[in-house]
Image (cartoon, rainbow, N blue to C red; front, side, top):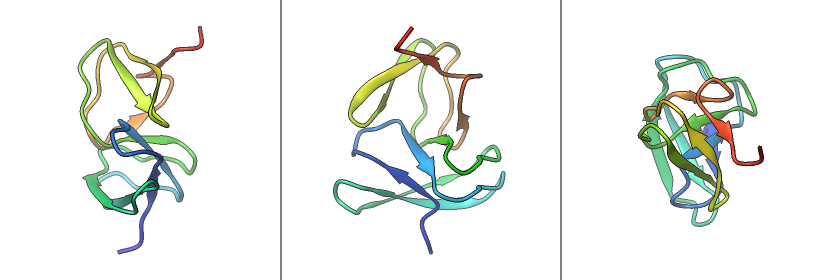
Length: 93
């Protein structure tokens, strides 16, 4: 199966869609640091370039991408959800 998202580093909470992802798809992503695969069911449609959760996160949990904290999730999210401004608060401001 062709991968549909990339996870920058093992341990990241999110991956980035490399194609549009449809809700309900069982999809495979690749960890860029070791080429290992991760599989999730997409709970939402995720547009190209947007983030998808590869693990579940609790409310107010730090969200990791590139091996660093990029923000917090005010209400939490579940693996397979679209991660964007509606459920991610930036660490920048």
